[in-house]
Length: 386
Image 1: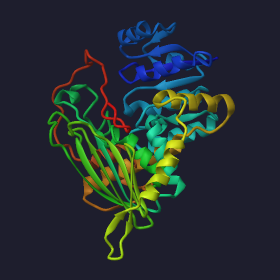
Image 2 (image 1 turned 90 degrees about the vertical axis):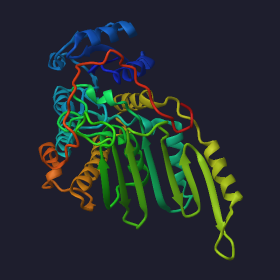
Image 3 (image 1 turned 180 degrees about the vertical axis):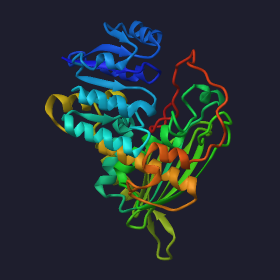
């Protein structure tokens, strides 16, 4: 029975707790940690946990914890992760992996030295529409991908950035490009790999209580010449999110849709119904996952601990996602085209360097310690259901 600790008991911790409770025969939550013990106590009561509560995670380092979920603000992900890895615990850390590539490298190095599992939360990979879209892409039936479109559309009210650590480059590390589109960017990299270069723009159009962007657009170029675009936003009403891949033979997407064209003698399109039906049959025959979201990723981490198998999303994957996000920030801040990969002597490699380079759209004004309502609402999912 693996002993689990939850480090940070804010809103996202509920997804972790609920998921661990689905595997009661494999693990047990024995500790909750939060600077505000009343938040941890509320979670303990809500879920009926038999867990100790501490306000300093270091109290748990010598307690034989097998696995920790780190659900804290991004600026502390690296030191907490490294401390637990050195203490012999496996680590599942919430997105984004860290606030700099330098920190990611230190986390990966600590995982390598300790021999423990390090996994970065990217729960949207573990959703049926995304897994099935990946399978269809890998089948090659759509042909070479010519254009990819990623819409990470969210909406957040002005007061969202009143929370003390949000909306600052130092504490949150960025706006929706880092903290919302991270899941979409992870999935895009998983499906198509890293682009060779990009150009990006960002702005703050609706949140004058935040230093960071609330909207960014990036155009990507891949080594084979194909193009992609990523829009990251917290100003889009309706929060419709999607992946669209335009292949040489067909268009496929999440929410799921397949459309195929073939050429008439004059070059104009006509529908290729036969290919559409072939791809649809392939998609329909793909099995559903036994779990989805956080539960599926936690199951994947537990299996890795139990069997020694690799996790689907490791530290290297988490770093690749942050590298693309950092490259977007670099291009949008400097106005330059950015080539990937970024080098260790790049000013954006460190958190301090990034903070010196990025613009402050506004200076943060209001600051509250906690919101009374910690409920998280999410946008439209990939199967079109809210």
